[in-house]
Image (cartoon, rainbow, N blue to C red; front, side, top):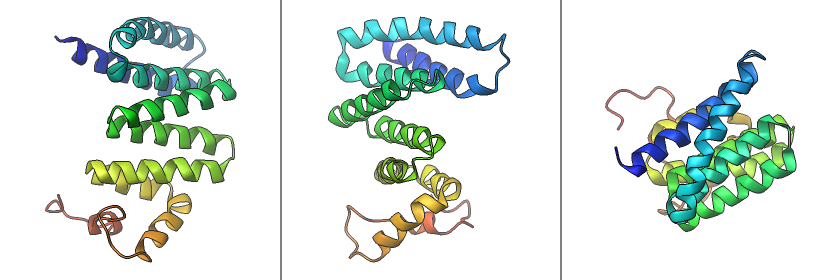
Amino acid sequence: IGTLSLAIFYFYDSLVRLAVYPKASQSQQPKLLKQVKANQRKMKLWAKNAPMNYLHKFYLVEAETYRILKRGYQAEEYYDRAIELARNNEYIQEEALSQELAAKFYLQGDRERIASVYLKDAYDNYARWGALAKVRDLSKRYPQVLFSVVRSKLQQPCTTENFIPWQTLNSSTSSTDI
């Protein structure tokens, strides 16, 4: 297995562990964090040798770790670092994921105005990447936040920059909508 495959495994393994952490038992939580730390040690080494491929991944896991540890200031800083590096290195899907997770973080803190900016950017990047199922998912999970985004896009002349695939607006899509 190549380094890239391993890195992706450790990246998503860490994100999954951090996602389930809040609902895990108190006895399970330290085990989850221990594995995330072990994964991060590997990711840090890869990030040092190839920051363009791995540093944004490292930063996103750091942001999520700070989120669950209730260290909001550090979480904010690392979300923004992850987003910026993913954008600079053209990892549009991981930029969108970082923006989505940052939006969730801000929504948990009742900071809807800030969350809406991150969520709009995530929505736009998922759409640009062609992840229409993810765009629909965001629209269903966050209609109160994204409604103004969709409304403003519908009022603008259609360009490649603001295009919303019709499938994203139709909640009853069929299997032929690909």
